[in-house]
Length: 128
Image (cartoon, rainbow, N blue to C red; front, side):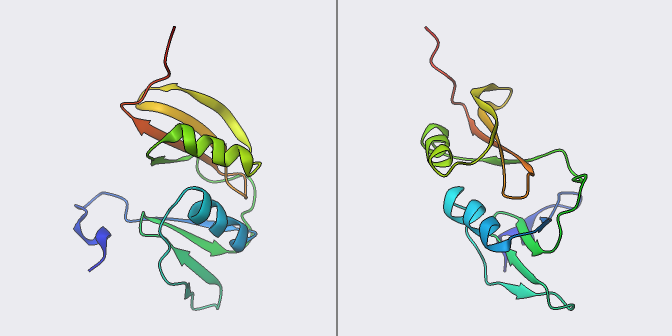
């Protein structure tokens, strides 16, 4: 039984995003963000799909423009450390580390330009 089988009706089961470079997207979501990949599966048309336990899937194919969603948000632990790792990997930042409505927050771009919000609930910037 998948971890996602317990969601009540009306809760999104997963987000499937198209990517121009599935290997770059796998590195971003898996290696940099720390999401847990599941076994790769092919679609009926032969395109690769890489699902993650956290409810996102990557499908090989043109991401196209304009993008169809505003952004995706993920809860993370130790956002300060993750922000440094993303900067070292030359990930594009839309917004620097700041106090958001739900906690310490940054917005970054995935390899296809999708806006990703990363949130550490209960954490805040230290104010002098």
